[in-house]
Image 1 (cartoon, rainbow, N blue to C red):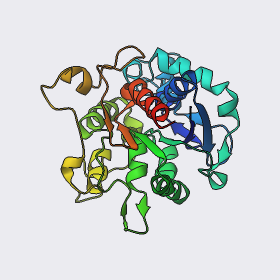
Image 2: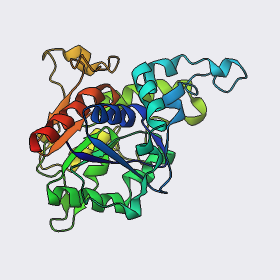
Image 3: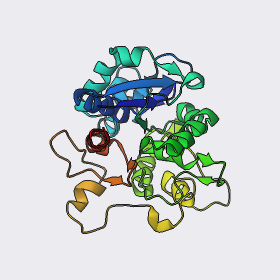
Length: 287
């Protein structure tokens, strides 16, 4: 059995990618430790927990507490239940601070995601976490990244090579198709915050999607073809690519996970059960 470190921002991380991973790993006998920037328990993006705040009527009294669009995009029941249980766990209630976090005794580093800019940008851009990720690859610690967590890895530059730690690796991440679909929907229903679903947006003159997770991660790779996505027409293609179906503990058909040796990656919350199970198996094999 292994020990898994999960660094998260102080707020706005995705509840499913963190909590379901925690649940899968701990149920399989692994130890999970957390790290936050301030060294205090973090909080997930409340919209992804409750679903409230994504509808045109969200700011209205009474009616604002009734989600519609949010019911599709928020964590499902399994994710919300896992998040509730995780909040009460001693693991989650006693994190270390990023500045005091080391890889001593750590067998795997799990990088979850989230998209809300106010909390995620500091996580993705943290020099402390960049150095931790580089060290993990240097030591041969298993690294597992999902969604925007892959972007954190992509921005982690090894000073010896001046290249991303993902250079020469095969990876997936949140695809532009998935990111664009959710963004297009919420930019009309959440009119007062039209870019809620984009952590980074394009500057004037940049083409559409240039600052998407997929585009930025791809620019960090050795070859564009090292970014992996579901092949149209492959088994369960629609389940995997629609963005409407999530995996479960007993059904991995909707999931897409890329295994590149000591590096695992996945795209979005709908991959999390399969992603965390793959990490658990890898730790058991290496143990």
